[in-house]
Image (cartoon, rainbow, N blue to C red; front, top):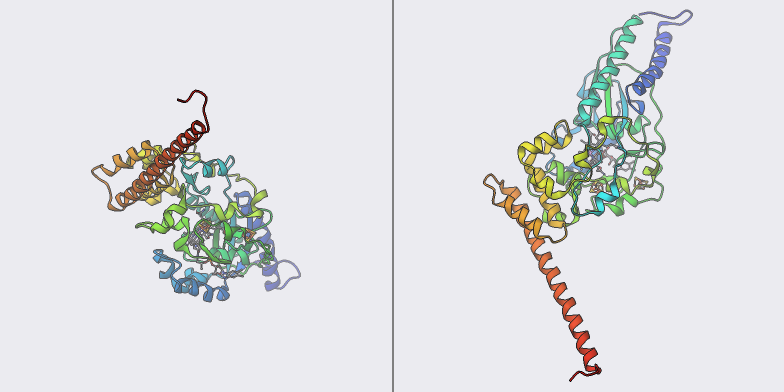
Length: 400
Ligand code: B12
Ligand code: SF4
Ligand code: SF4
């Protein structure tokens, strides 16, 4: 182990770690991470909250949330030897997000803005691996052992948000996402679990104050209390995670959201100044920007796979894609074209049972709306005739 002049080995190791922590932040930024923070692995305070969430069944069909139990709150069990977590933030807000245009036109499909470009998992994991390699190379050049590290993004059984909060990336908003005044909440999180006792960062203080905008704007009432999301009610879960039928009570509330949901983030005042992503990979593909529901519904499985290549959307598969679009078509204004498209898909040979059930729901919704609008038209015509009759009765000249 190398030492610096006039320092004991432990002093020199500690000062090397302090310098390294600063370098890690610089390297992280060069790799495209907008923020890099460091924390220890102690999440004991979170265990009871995680257990309560699981006990209430808020994970729904996401069995993976329960399978790993408390390992989620124990990063040192996930990768033995881990003493620190390097938490990173990567911004994904794309330019020309067109949130309002897309949400207000019920004939378009709304795709959550994190999913319009390339799948973030591989990209972030590869950059974290580079960061780990850089740390190891530096250690070796200084005469120390290489670091033992493991990168994680999203799919890891670890509580990414509480770790990010400890590492000073942001505070936990009432929607349960991490946010801060500079970045809002439009970012992904990733972690490098590492065996180096690096100096840790200080958490920032919560800034939601009395605001409850995310809670009141959630279309399905999924934020059941501040900081707690009942996954089973969240449109992100209903459209992405849930394999089976979408409970009927939520279908009318989903509107045209066919993949994920951004409403709690759109309502958040802290997001007004959020920066755009610097990753062109996260820009929305033209075909997913303001896609016409009927065009998306017409995609064959081969077309779906082609159009969503390299995107996170591909993971839900063609059946769930059709299921979600069927719900949005059921919520769209009454239209004979929509009814024809639903009927055509319903009579295709390889139709899946779950998709069929959603199509039938959509057909019912469309037909009753069509009947309602026909009734409204009839009513309007009747009222006009009645008015005309009153005019006549009042004494139209030469009415004899
Ligand atoms: C399962 C999951 C989901 C589920 C469940 C959501 C949930 N809130 O748990 C579903 C499918 C619904 C979902 C949706 C979304 N997700 Co998600 N999801 C995850 C995943 C894989 C695990 C989350 C988890 O552990 N949940 C269990 C609960 C118990 O944990 P928690 O919500 O963090 O709960 C803590 C707080 O509630 C807190 N708490 C409880 N009471 C109190 C009280 C106070 C005062 C405080 C401060 C805290 C507090 O304690 C709990 C335990 O620590 C993570 C990745 C990961 N491995 O962490 C991504 C992740 C959280 N998701 C992410 C994203 C982007 C989304 C969506 C925005 C996607 C979209 N646009 O459709 C939505 C947002 C919905 C929402 N408001 O949460 C990002 C969040 C990034 C960020 N800025 O925070 C993550 C981190 C993925 C990533 N790597 O970037 N997700
Ligand atoms: S993502 Fe949508 S459905 Fe889920 S909590 Fe946020 S607003 Fe509610
Ligand atoms: S909408 Fe309000 S309460 Fe919700 S996360 Fe943003 S600031 Fe916090």
